[in-house]
Amino acid sequence: MENRAQAIEAQVRSAVEATNKTGLLRKETLSVLIRATHSASNVLKALAADNIQYLFQDFPEQEEQAINAIYDLCEDQDQQIRIQGYKAISRISRIERRLVKRNADVLLQLLQSDEPGEVSVVKSALLEHLEMDRKGTLSVLHDQLTSVDCDMDEEERAMRERLRSLVSSFLTNDAFGSLDPESLVGVVPYLSLAEAEHIVHKLPESLSKQLLQALLERVTTTLGSSFSRTRPELELAQNFVLEQRMTGPLELLRYYRDHLTKTTFLDQLTQPDREWLLGKLASVLSFVQRSPSDQELLQTQWGVVAACPYLLEVWCALPTTNLH
Image 1 (cartoon, rainbow, N blue to C red):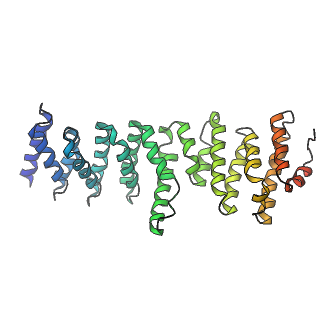
Image 2 (image 1 turned 45 degrees about the vertical axis):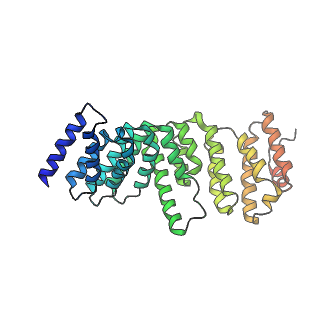
């Protein structure tokens, strides 16, 4: 086996150095390397992982086989070979950029490994893919964060939720410093509540308006389900405005007017939930009174009150109500 490995290694060196890029030597060597990924020899598998990158691009008819051979290395029984496979994915992406999105999707699946050392290598490979094609790789990450398909069975849903959690953690922690803040705002609607709370404090103030919109989008996604899901999301958005004062209250007040104060919506809530929501609105209206000269705010708050008869009690209870 050692002699065979040495012979193949010599053949690979000759093929890599060959001036005829589409010649028979290079083509046959690529076939040898593809077969090597399924051999019993880890030496040959490692040789394939290191060298397929130099040959696959010149032979379109063998390209798919070569790519799948590298993917097979990522599922090898030997951990070191799997790691070689992860690194090989990045190498072929650098050579053939149209593979970046496809390979990024494969790497995302590999985040589910139970071996911390392997996960670390996969994360490094994903960061490399973000460097190669930020937009394309982000689109793959984004796709994994979207809602779980209701047609999935319980096992599939559990796997998808786990992967979704791994991807969001990667974005908000490992990839945070590699991404522009605008890109991170775009994924806020799809993060877990804890991750959204975490990222709110890390993004620049210049993006506060966009971030509030993302937080309100999170609220919207909960409105068709239990109000117990809505409460913490609304708390997060409201604290962003009233407590942290990262941006003005106008958009938050408009959101109450357009989504949370319709009679049809309030009638669906239990009495405790309705009282809680109106109490939150009272806090917003009280906060708005600090800017009595802002005509747009004044018009919006009157629009909120006019939207639903329940709110008249809230409005009248405010000690600083401006009736002009």
